[in-house]
Length: 218
Ligand code: GRF
Image (cartoon, rainbow, N blue to C red; front, side, top):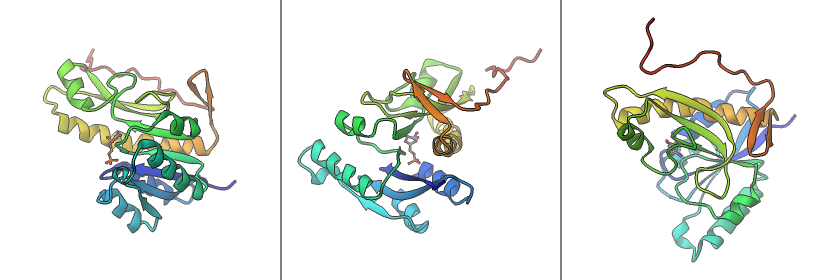
């Protein structure tokens, strides 16, 4: 079976993009990146793509009169590359509902929280301020509502006493770099079905262990 053709949309450093590039470098990985699209010309992720020999495109939202025109160009660029799956990886523009609906069940995102908690920005600071014991990250299908949509994969990270938003961001990012390629792999292997806004994974392995925070010693 041929590889799933993915386009990655970024606005910044692209560490998640790098994790996907690295995963795709493995010849058994069932997907390949056909395009990296950024709305910022100085996004470091573009360098990462160039180093890996991947086609890049910059579409600056400021060059368009309105969001619809901007999104129309994005749509065209994605279709020109016969994109099967769009991966948002730190793409910092809100996408309109007609664009999102056009890519329904073919566009995924990574968010640095255990959705549906902490949608939006500054997720790590908000979690620490609330005193919750677990933070995390989520890969989900994109729906018109921000940070909404069927959840594919999550990772939970315990928040320590001395946690700062920066230290937590580093731990969460490490997990992001694992779950994003894994979610892409599940989709590319056709192991995912969406029913009633739920993701059903064929042959899913559910971890048996309960994670306690703080640890329970007895
Ligand atoms: C990540 O924290 C991701 O969860 C969020 O934006 C950040 C992108 O980081 N959507 P990077 O550009 O992949 O390093």
